[in-house]
Image 1 (cartoon, one colour):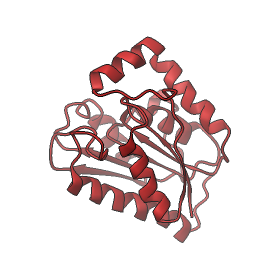
Image 2 (cartoon, rainbow, N blue to C red):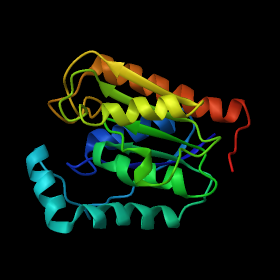
Image 3 (tube, rainbow, N blue to C red):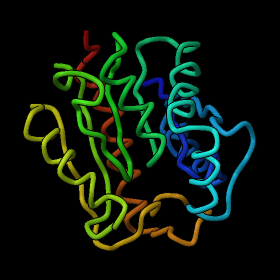
Length: 197
């Protein structure tokens, strides 16, 4: 089974993020959920974003990298929205990364390196008309075009954090499909023996 580090979104380590982690745990995987906000959660994207601006986007990303430093290198890096920043950075730069699941966001590969690392499978999940993902869509399509082991899954709708069951934006059908695909992705890592780099 895979070992996973899951980074939360801009509203914090909500019960919905923990519930998603629990779904992966129920499938037999070990999942770490570092709290980059030191116990704070926020009722809206705007409140969470204001906190991140106060702390600094760079500092939040650095907290994620520091949290992962305590874990084995052979992990799958997963991020929800803001959490994609440390997840993608680690997947691209930390030797031993087994894969990446980028939920609701995707950063241009060039932010963290020249290319996506060979042998590191990746999936990107987002809603087709999510206004927050609109600016990330080009980066996601470029990643899929560049990497032979990358997939982009687009879901009907316009919600951002649709996989967080604790938020009004939750879409149970899309979340169920995304979770199933994530579980299959993790299972395939064991099935084909991949342990990149």
